Amino acid sequence: MKKQYERPVISQLNTGVMNKFGTKTEFTPTSHIDDNAVKDLLKEYGSPLFVMSERTIRSTYKQAVRAFKTRYPKVQFAWSYKTNYINAVCNVFHQEGSWGEVVSRFEYEKALNNGVPGNKIIFNGPDKTDDDLITAIKNESPIHIDHLDELYRLNELSEELNIRPQVAIRVNMDTGVYPMWDRFGFNYENGQAWDAINKIMLADKMDLRGLHCHIGTFMLAPSAYGIAAGKMSDLAIGIKQKYNKDIQYIDMGGGFATKNTLKGSYLPGADICPSFDDYAEVISTAILNAGFKENELPLLILETGRAMVDDAGSLLGTVISNKRLSDGRRATILDFGVNVLFTAFWYDHKISPAQDFSHYTENTVLYGPLCMNIDVVRENITLPPMKRDDQVVVHRVGAYNITQSMQFISLRPAIVMIDMEGKAHIIKQRENRETIEMNEVLPEYLKAFKL
Amino acid sequence: MRIKKNIAISESGFIFNPAVGDSYSTNPIGTEIIKMLKESKSVAEINSYILNTYQVEASSFEKDLYDFVKMLEKYKLTETDGQEA
Image (cartoon, rainbow over all chains, first blue to last red; front, side, top):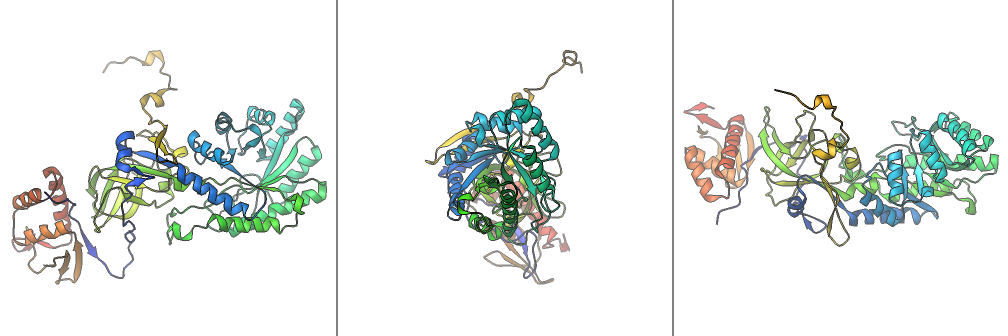
């Protein structure tokens, strides 16, 4: 019986010196996801492959709901379609009780097709056409107004249709964090928000049901949400005082961080990511202490996407080759690239081998398969020696990768969901040439050529 | 090409170059290869030993050995006929 082979490696030992590759982080292989062997999944569905864990989605959702509902009496989550709009994923959230939150007509129609009632689809975003607005008005969907042009247009449409649109305004504000997201909605500090509220209330053509904000993304400082919730409550109480109108809901948007490690972060994401309880504590405290009467507390809506689904997604892939770069660094080429792993531009993703390995490691650069210099999955990582056909698992890729992936050079992989019993279901087929060329039109005169 | 005479390597794969004070770590198969190179074994002999001992294909080991030897040269652990490689 021959011995198990491991590629010979040698590395220089540097004591007391900082190493940009970091220390070894992988001590055990990720050979299974929710009881399914990585090698079996890749054999059956091909490599690379996205895998969504229904178990993780539901348990994460329950954690978030528990964190908020134990602190505030009226809470509603709305699933952020842009974070991951694969229907199977959306419907897990809807089964758990989430409304839909969309930022385009395409997403709006997906939510309707999934069976979400129109009045439970929150329509956000700066780009809503007349047709989008009319559809949303007729469906009684909460329309979150982004700018004055939209506000004026809604007033006109309200008259034309003789229906009162259900609206909220999006408010942006200084919460003490940089960058301040002031491109969406109306500013709190300079009076734009009050200007919009006055225009809606005095025109009396729409029902101002709520106030919406979304202060940023990957917010590592929960305190910013406390400031935002305080300012939103201040507006709601001001509306009650000025117009004797109860604001039905305050929508705090999303932006909660996950355990992924941002590029340039000194500490690993798992060490600095606030919990749902941290966010829930500051938000609910700010609203509860703002001065609402008990029976006038607004519904608290949360549209958090990333923190709900990031942990549930994994990307499985295969090693294509190893090579040595001119400066002596090891490089490993994988069969998935930044076209399907967009978050590789923001995160130092945790990547684990899927098979047993020894305790020897090598400093490595991980490249994708694209013939494009920017296709770098990890600039520096310390991994055990891997050889062609070895398999890897990229962790925490459930948010934004599937919705932002593109068919650049190589096509999008299949997506599998593993259900609560550990059974794998295909939820999106691998793309092929026909998928991509479906909408192409080749003029007759260009069909023939001679070489 | 062989490993310099003054290079020390332990059973656990710890390598020390007393000329400059640098130290290195290698895995068990790397230890075996370095020891064979120290004993002036030829590439063919090393190939034959590894292929008979480990579950690896010849083509796969050939490129791994080439890469390993290049790293030994980069770390200046080798010499050719008394000259530094």
